[in-house]
Amino acid sequence: MTLTELKYIVAVARERHFGKAAEACFVSQPTLSVAIKKLEEELELKIFERNASEIAVTPLGEEIVRQAQTVLEQAAAIKEIAKRGKDPLAGPLKLGVIYTIGPYLLPNLVRQVIERTPQMPLMLQENFTVKLLEQLRLGEIDCAILAEPFPDTNLAIAPLYDEPFMAAVPSNHALAQRKTITTEVIKSETMLLLGTGHCFRDHVLEVCPEFARFSNDTEGIRKSFEGSSLETIKHMVAAGMGVTLVPRLSVPRSALDGTSDAARERDDEAFVHYLPFDGDPPTRRVVLAWRRSFTRYEAIAELRNAIYACELPGVKRLS
Image (cartoon, rainbow, N blue to C red; front, side):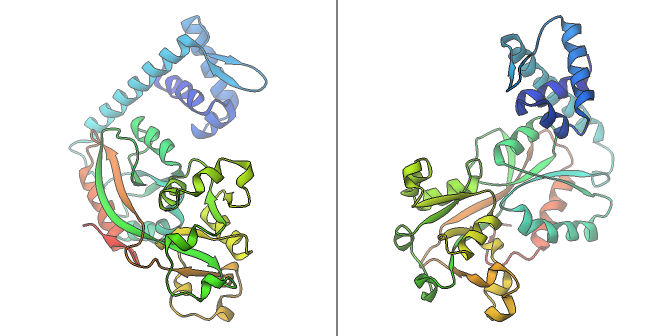
């Protein structure tokens, strides 16, 4: 029995799919399958029930997977202890970022980290909040940039910034003539939402809870549509399919600096108009989270400083 084999069974239990688990572990599917079969033979029991449509964990397998998770966490803690006394900035830092932050923060952040701490390259992982929390717990990533709220998992948290939301509407929509917008006005429009699993979807539904029933009801398809990413949602707005809310950092500079539509006509952004909220806008708090057992405190501090060195237009820094 090896830590690698334990890592494989935890991945399969999480993904419920051998191919996806192999991809998550950066190995081929045959390699992962052979290792798990070897472990099952050593233990003389089945951890997984396999059939054509799905992978299920056996009752005893559930107990073994839980214990494997504990062992992997303890092994990660041992590695952290071993790093004490070494240069905390030397070596890669494994950073997770949620989908609705990554595209708008990472390009600038990576550049800042390369300039400030070239000996500490970032290994990046984009995913849903729930996946990143699990990867943090298992030591698969060192830290993560998330948006609150999320389940309390006994992580260390450093607030980064409060980010306001803006409304995105088609440029030819009557709302595009307004200077600001309110939640009451938005409630009468067709709302475009991110799919289930995105925390930003939950943030939008907090602002406009009326759309929650439509998003779970096929009868309400005329009131809300779903997309897989913020950029997909923006293209749907540009096509006139509805309106949406977006975080401030996702708004292109050209959309707010007075650049003409003619200069922006090369892409769909020319057909999207962004409106701030009247009064106090809805916001989300973005934080940096890491395991309390993670000992490279200087690396966390440098990463936070690199984030604050980035251009963060329109947000309230929480340094």
